[in-house]
Length: 279
DNA sequence: CGCATTCCCTGGGTGC
DNA sequence: TGCACCCAGGGAATGC
Image (cartoon, rainbow, N blue to C red; front, side, top):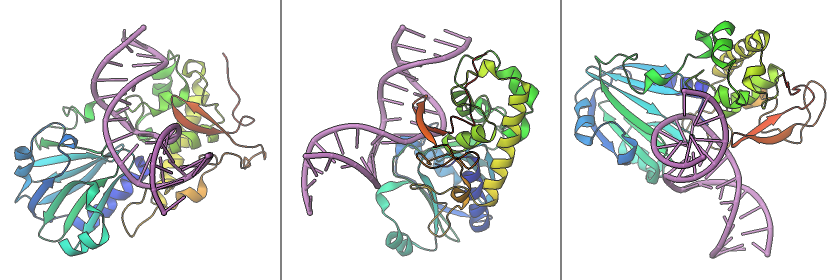
């Protein structure tokens, strides 16, 4: 599932391929994906150039001269770049199309098998702070310290895993990296957030930063269906310690990794390294 | 308000 | 091989 490192990898990939391209045509295939506007509004990007590729947490942002669009890949959203229509038709199943942008250089195709992906369009003078999608997004782990995190969560009676998945509190972590961060921080995923002290928060921030950075370096994690594009896959799955490792041995103590459900999400952890704190 | 649950959607996996 | 079934999950909506 695309989390911060995967979206960053997509951003870099797109930046290398589509920056400065001029939009010739745009097609939206899943109308519901375009949440805040209609087809007519979207068509305004025609004749504009792509000026910047940006990313806020898991949101990918494509800037044009007068507008920008925010794409969310959810679980299975993917971007592809093709040189021409026939390459595109030969290499992909078009059933999954969400958005297609034809430029003077190539074709940008945004697909999602589950049709959960979203696209929002804004005029460029709407700042990120005013933007109704982005203003709800909390700070990335790089932009928050343990004091702020502690303050935000020390009254929460929710499992810490759920709290860290809440993008309004801290953004960029998804199901894979939360498991890895909690393992590295020696915190049980079902520990109530209010029981975590400043030291725990410091560990969470420190490990979130290092794990995300390392994952970005390896172009993210490829498990199940995630791949940046046709030709690029992430490599961070080699470094996962607990996620998707049910039945395997904990690298620290050899204990068998357990799988439970936390907030409806599959959750992997070592019940020796990660002891539940009850106060 | 805070927290839990439901829903969206469909490919892939399992079991018969 | 084919069919029925269930699971995965980010985030919005709904419920308590």
